[in-house]
Length: 633
Image (tube, rainbow, N blue to C red; front, top):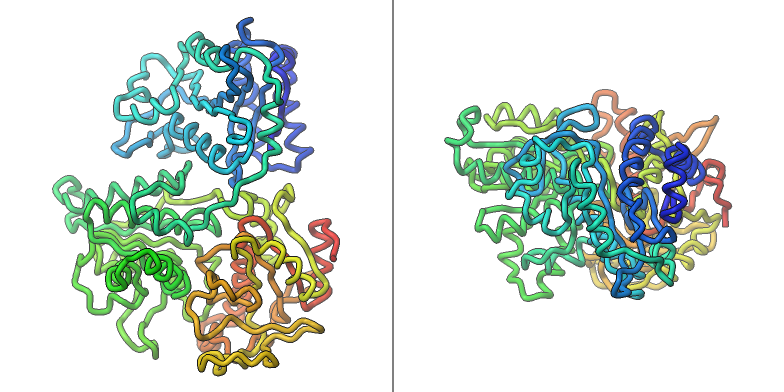
């Protein structure tokens, strides 16, 4: 999505007449897009003056098209400035420009990362050249128009306030790869930037390049489970952008440092505990798997850990089908209860995904070990916990930030957790941060949630689950759509499927004319099985995984009464173990309420491209329709 678009000549006129910032602001409002009003408005006033000066060269045709604030496909990130046209040799080119207000920055030891004052604090951020390059690669990889119309993307960065005296801080040989991929221009480089643009854009293109990009069909998005084989072989399947890259380089640096204790005199034990906080779709699992692959290549002893078996089993199947030995795979992907008897610092790095799902005790009867968090920290020089406390979905879940901090102190492990460890932008749900805010508001998880979103995400509401399933079936391209439901229906067919029986007249979920079974009990890989579309998944088989589309049945444990969304734990099936023992906890009713709301947030955020919703409570479905303006089908 492009927020502001125009010709070069009209853009210069808008800047000259003092209109540009207000026009961009107007477009944001018309598209119902949130933004940092005051700071971004000032940045537009300032930066567009400089870009206007850069583009005044007559060699660049006034009819060349440009865009401001283009949303990168499948993300919530935006490209600052784009100018498109033909070069002298008639190539269709797009120059992508990352704009910064910085005056100075500091060099860091982390590749492609600098340290500067931004967002009201000193932060580690991506080098602007890396940022521009990563945005260009994502557009190239996911926008079908790029290849279809032979469009060339040329990224660069322009820091128009950056002082010449500080040039060596940003244009340093340490960043030569990023700058080589996306050239850097500073305060005194306006003429150089003009010449750079002229090299690629001289005259109006004949195909309306920016329209083609803005309306380009998105290529099928990658899922982690489909990419894991290639990633472990050392291939780059995902381009980490912004805070993802910051977190990745932070963890890698600490793993290297942990083996060289003398370099960190404040940490005599050589142990680090790193907490990475991020909501659904912020890239926690992608970062963890990418780190696992990179650390293994460097011959560090590392493993990936989850409490939930579903993602591990999917990874096992994918890797086994590609000639990886089972013993080797199982040594890399471990359950959270694997470290009861582990030696201190047995691993260089343990990457604990879905850390909010960790338990105190381990084993089938939850009677082994002392505490899974303690055991993971004890077993590793660097323990990394990827966490989202809003995804706790069981009474046994004890993974909290405070709990991790507590055990890090006891295990003499240096804690790393600050604003540089937060993943705030999400890359699922078509990159709509607003959709996740909508879920928070709908489920009343946060009172101040802003649920204005642009509906590029395919959200549909159904009055009948059978109709929803048939519409979802049309989206089951490449086996990437699934039905999900809250655990409000008894799993009557479990014993049958465990014995390999498939009684066509036996069902678990019956709602009007809709009949379905829970996911087969005789498979651990329901999420990728070729014959599993007609079975309905629950929280335990989908958490930690993602699909293109999901259809979610919201059961009777969630309803709308007296102007509020309310929960009812009694509506849960007795076969669901999520709430077992809940009444033994302090403030158990609040905890049960939170688990039900969190469960539906997880279910409703599994789809990369779309989510279809049916509610057994008709008042809740009507409430969602009124919130979104979407008609019920």
